[in-house]
Length: 356
Image (cartoon, rainbow, N blue to C red; front, side):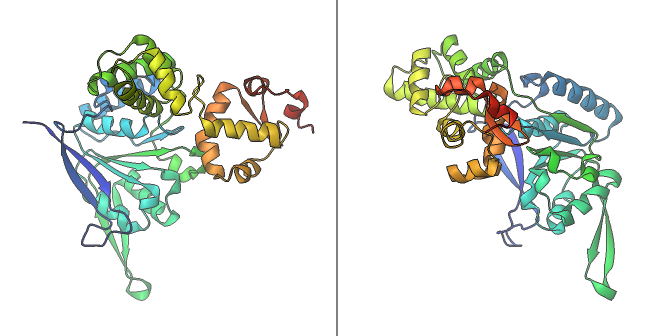
């Protein structure tokens, strides 16, 4: 009989009270029908060695004490495994993971409904925790420190404070913008870690493991290396590209994934040898052609591209900075010499110094 897994999520604000507003709904799924690429245990987790070691020590110590693990804050670019780590911690602790997000917790009742359903040592994972409303965040403080919530009923002279005691639990917060967290919230996490981009060797190991889970056969090592170097140091992107290569090989080839099929498949996706897609190239070309290589403000770039500035800052710029294609100065964004060579345009060294 296939083992069942409990996945939980917080009801969205659009759901009625009968449908489970401000509550967490459990969805059972059979492992026989869902091939999950995400690792379940720490020993299966690839990369982020320092974080894995810190978590192993914390989890082992918590289990010896018979208590919940310390609260954890994970920050870094999207796609590096923050959600996966939350589920791994829950699995290692032998507990359940309750998943929600900052925007979904619109009022205090949403948080109370989730916390009161949790059992001892359960994990509450809040994605985009920097977007928590201030009114909800105030309820989190006593929950994290004292394992209780003081919930106010009614208002005015009829107001009544009800104290709800909570089971010991672990809160895991994830954010791509740690600087937007309040100091009061950040200081209540016992473990805080910044997730780094993955190197190509770790990405190849992740891809190798994924080919087995996806039942892919006849995959060349050169093909995995070609995908890894185009994955922007991000496992989520690596798995997405692997699936696109698998589809291309099945439809346009013999089903055998080679380095050649990788290049052809990813050319259709608009992904080049450095892992840059069309939006990345548009971003670079706007700075080079419209703004003379910079400096230029992010809002101006976003307006020119008709895109959101936060999206560019969170999804586009981190990898360009990692490649050394982009420089952030007080005057704005500037292209580096490497970026100009990539685009085939003249490099203006004075732009990095804030010149015209």
